[in-house]
Length: 487
Image (cartoon, rainbow, N blue to C red; front, side):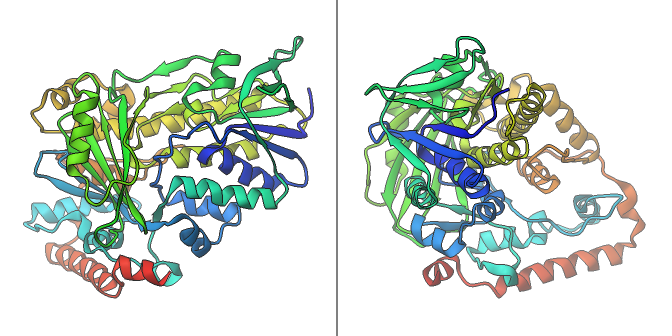
């Protein structure tokens, strides 16, 4: 086995520069890191919304939060507002954080269901600080506030911010386009990347951040792609930026339309807007017209169509190459998981890093974890679509389609007994599953009767106290825009 002393990152963008930041920060004294990118090749760059795991990753790479917020035009995020997903006039918020208080025998929502059976009409979101703060458009950072939050940010600024840090830490950046991938004639591993100008960039280990093209993992190493269009037929997105016309809200908006959904992401200096749709149900021209007719403010860039195919690479780690982000798979950005999947892959790579040479066992372990992670995200995204009561052809198709067994079992469990769970290798918590299932109209037929052990008056009193504590905490928060202005 060849010891790994030089890592070559093919491609920049968010994936490439996150990889560079992690490797230089954590392994900078042990390996050399080279990143290849071309200014002529654009990036998809629409991933401007994150989930709270981003903050832990930022700690690993030494990012100062206020410095990052100022540099990237970031705002804060407490969840996602789903508008029109159950029915055209419906709305619910999938918030970060924890709802109520659970016991070892039953999660909080079982007690809430018992209170509903006794006549309470309080929404479950009343027992979550992040939910109520998002609804009131309030926010505060720091340990005192105790909120579980993420960010919206400008992806291009983020890549520049990471690049500056990496180059200051000694990373070598090579400008230019990759012409071909050179493989070792004996082992079959990647030996070097040959540039259009003839330069040869050799390495011991390679990270494929070349986007949907998957130049290394797909074209050179021939790793196949597992297609998930049977469950997620959306295959187009159009993105556009507009000037800000109102205070920034602390949540992403996901607004359903007749053949998909639209996003609105508030930054400090502008809005990120986009439309996701299935081309079998909506043409590119109609999607563009719909998007532009609904945005606010001045249009800052020309809208562009992004074609994609939902699915995953059959192996994320093959020989001496690991694929990140779009090269390794893609699930539409409905729950803002794209950047998380890059970060968790990098975290696992460092835990399994092949200092002494690539190990088949380590690659198998990495691939197994990557598969389970992205399949869990896939199921959670499908959940939003299949539990709908809309009447357009696209939505009827999503409601009637056969589901992956893993998701069908989970839905049946909640429908029959209100049981929700988070496996050890899954991203989404019980709170997340409960909020979306209830928000999408999935009414449990039964629940854990341990909730009946509390006297009726005691249960109502306890829930009222919890809701009062949440309301009090939210009252003490500043408006999100005011806090953002101070930062």
